[in-house]
Length: 339
Ligand SMILES: [Zn+2]
Image (cartoon, rainbow, N blue to C red):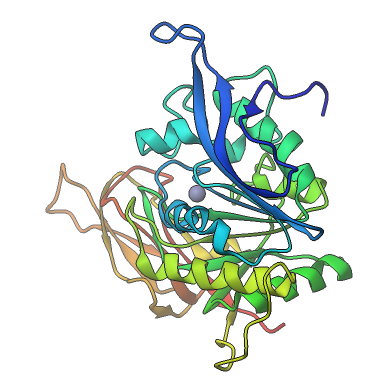
């Protein structure tokens, strides 16, 4: 990975105990000579055991992950922990403070910037720090997302599709422990648009087992998504023997296994205009079902353009903004799979 990151942590990441502090991104600019950007981080470590990295706020307009992690950060002294938990609730802090998906400093999407660059822009420096300093410490990572400003999700755990038997078994164990109502399998080495500059790819390159998920969206707080994270991460910590086992109280939640790895499950705007959806989150759509209409506001007496999903499945994602331009994602489905 080359030279050491220019970002430093104000707390040790390798000592027993609980520490809370900041990552310091050097940022000497017009209104802040010698300044830095502080990014909150917390570490809890006790004895031997695996390291679990918990991150959110890679996109700055997603809130379920950060708010769950705030509450976990406040409770670290109360955990009967074995191993180490590293928490960064708003990895792209400049974007998070601006409530935008991309950074207001360099306009870059952090999750299209990995492995990043030591000498790059602020977002590229953050990506490089995660790739070269945090992920090498982690045996497991959960990076929490949501739909952000432009999309709403039915809260869903996302997990990599692996052929490799060992990785597949490890991820299956994590999913069972997380016990989500839904898990969507996807290619974690690439974004939906094919770009491989993503968190999941560098996690895998570091030998780190990785889960992610979309826990709400719409630039607001989905409480069901936050509750899913709380129960899921607790289950994972117990599964990894990082927390004591709980007495079994109820039967495990039944999990629906889905895939999103099919272009037919996605609908994109073919034209600019006003999007009127014909489906809602949670709907079960058959192949060819109507996704919605796009009205032309300049000739509104003309019939609207019909948009259809080629495939069928459970509607887990829908666009929030009615105003669309060609290429905007209108929503997507997830199809049941047999394991
Ligand atoms: Zn995101």
